[in-house]
Length: 363
Image (tube, rainbow, N blue to C red; front, top):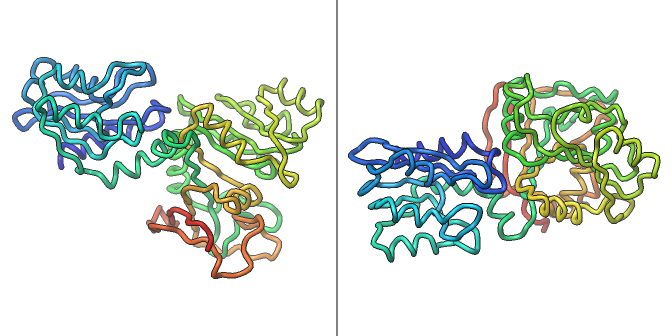
């Protein structure tokens, strides 16, 4: 498992820079030592197995290859990894999980077995499944994997009754959020968050200094109320404003400020989120991080569009009947119909608690 752990480390370190391809790590081992390693490069460049085998060179003959995902066996922007493995003379291949891509999904391993390569699946499978959950949804449905992230006080508030929200959680939680942003293809917020907080929505290293790759910023803004001097419009990266009733004047003003304006169907006075997610899928957004506010979160949960929840809970009491809560929307009338989280996990992040899980359909 030692070598697979290294492969998983390589894969995690590269998450975000190679989307829409999955971030894979690979290690070539011979005589008890690593002779080559690598991670998936940006689209159109080498896959992890190819990078590791190139580093190993001729020494790869008779070696073992550890990879976090089943090697591909189809021609894309790069040649099949299975061809490179066979040409290198690798003796054994250890893969964490099979590739969820319907074009592969076990065929790569079968090809290697038929050619006489020993194959083993399962090392590091649990971590790999979590790492590729977004890719698995995207490659099978064409839709992004939606993670709803919010931070709240112990009494369920995301801001005071005067609208102050900085900072509910501590530095450790904020650093973790920036790591998640760097791993995401897009960040989505609602217009109320823009008007209240004027966020930059950038991925920053350790909370300070812009990282090189910036996720697409998506603002759900039915009427085109985003200010032309919004902080996000002066940041590196692109901003998409999803609207359904923006005036020509608003559209022109925001376009001049550097935003892309896209009109969507209207449902009950709001942007049709199903259509918006389909558009983001067409733009190869694999992992979508939603950061609020309560109206947008409520709509996503009401319509069953959230794949994973990330809830930071700070040990603070805010109070106030008019203070905002993280999830609004229609909700439920009975506790028995409340949405439960599957596979919930709780961890401490600095002084805060982080609860993660997968929302199940309401009963």
